[in-house]
Image 1 (spheres, rainbow, N blue to C red):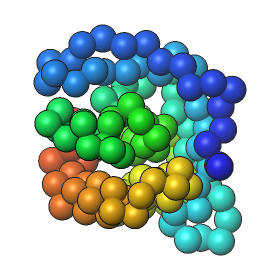
Image 2 (tube, rainbow, N blue to C red; image 1 turned 180 degrees about the horizontal axis):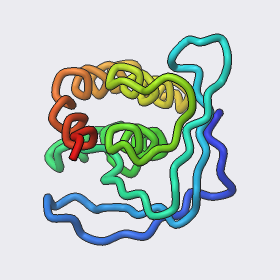
Image 3 (tube, rainbow, N blue to C red; image 1 turned 30 degrees about the horizontal axis):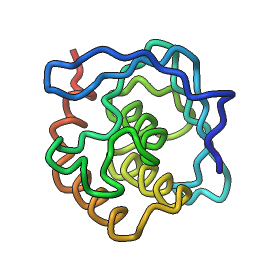
Length: 139
């Protein structure tokens, strides 16, 4: 798997939306080929970056594969870094579509069930624009 870090270490606090918010206490580097450039690209997540992991409604958490702190968690952390514009990248700017492909890539690498992959990918593609916009608003 291309997710590289000695350990996945976070601290938590209860978020305002009844999700648990995680704060990265160790820098993480993820290598991805999601943009199909023929080489791996690094995505660096800095210490202090926050994430709710996967923004999956609480009512779905009992469905296998839909736990925000399950196998999707590291991929969701990278996805949030790209959405919130806190990830450090090189090269061409990342688009929302690129970012969604990184999450799909993670789910594939984690061997999550195909139906779960499709449901989550379609959800972020169709419903993620407000979160993307919130992270990319110029002051």
